[in-house]
Image 1 (cartoon, helix red, strand yellow):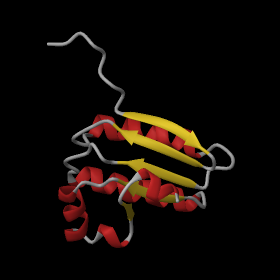
Image 2 (cartoon, rainbow, N blue to C red):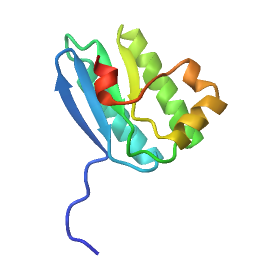
Image 3 (cartoon, rainbow, N blue to C red):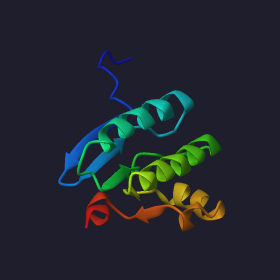
Image 4 (cartoon, one colour):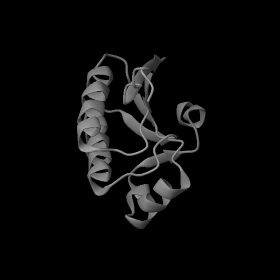
Length: 117
């Protein structure tokens, strides 16, 4: 077993009028979802933020709780007149979003760069 500290579940970056939340998890679980929401809320409420990009390229599984959290995050962003964009969604997660029809409400982009463009 490694003694290296675990990467934080989410790393937040600011670039121009956007924040990028890089999710360092394979699976969204309850504890990490709450932490992620808090970190994004804190960063997104700063003045001038118009776009929230959630880099999901490492996320392999999003259970129903995670899907609900994404819908809530989207609602919060809209209430603040911000756009939420999910970037780098892997095929399995994209398929889940398609089956649940969440791909109709959530903005899915191929990459962080595409989401920022």
